[in-house]
Amino acid sequence: MKENSNLRTLKDIKLGISTAQNSIGAFYSTKLRQVIKSKEVTTTKAPLIDIAFYGFDNTFSHNRFVSPDNLETTTLTEFGNATATKFINKQESGDINLSVQNFESMTTDAPLKTLPIVNANYGDEYFEDTPLPRVVLFETADGRKGALMVKQVVKEGNEDSYIISDIKIQKND
Image (cartoon, rainbow, N blue to C red):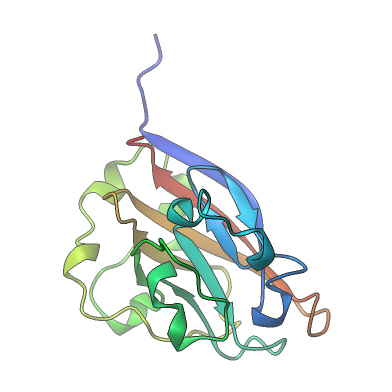
């Protein structure tokens, strides 16, 4: 019998910049395992959204993952029943670290368990489109820890620009 890794791996998640929030989608639910466009947010889906990507524009010079309950600091559409997710967008700003190599080789949730994301007093920093790949750490409102690896940025104009990421997150659900 195979041991439970307690790790869910989601590949090639496409999230649009702010102006693509209705065409591509800037929200993600790790429980539903789907991208959600602003116009698709419902009272049922809202509390299940735990990731919001805010790309300022198609130059990708100001990007960050934002807690769904803190969208007023962005141009993303705010919604009720939003949950709180803590992010560490720029690991180089502090001492909590998960490298690209650690992310890629992760097969269980063991590396995530020890990350003190809850205690981080940084995390809302913007990051640029280089260097890539970039690992962003997070912890959802229900205590699941995870990491996103931004692999690629696609510059296709205001309504069609997006990032492609992989996500590894604790199951615990």
